[in-house]
Amino acid sequence: MNTAECARLAWFKSTYSGNEGGECLEVAATPGTIHVRDSKDPARDPLAFRSSEWAAFVDFVAGL
Image (cartoon, rainbow, N blue to C red; front, side):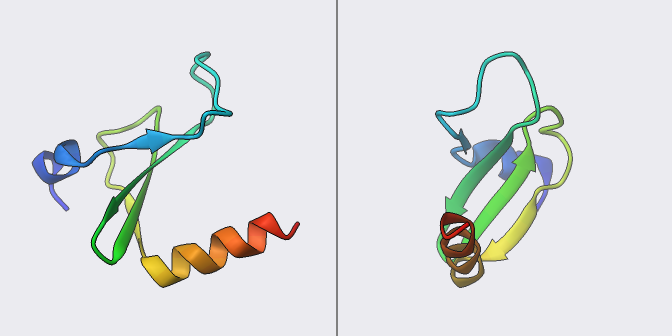
């Protein structure tokens, strides 16, 4: 994904994240893919996961 494509995505971070600039992740969804990036370094290439992989991760974390 190039920088222009990345900039057009609608990025969201958790409402639990503060505004102090700490360690936050942002996520953006496109059809079939969830993109994840470091909020402190938005110019860096995001990670990409299939929606099914992301759903499995969220289910696992919710069960902890």
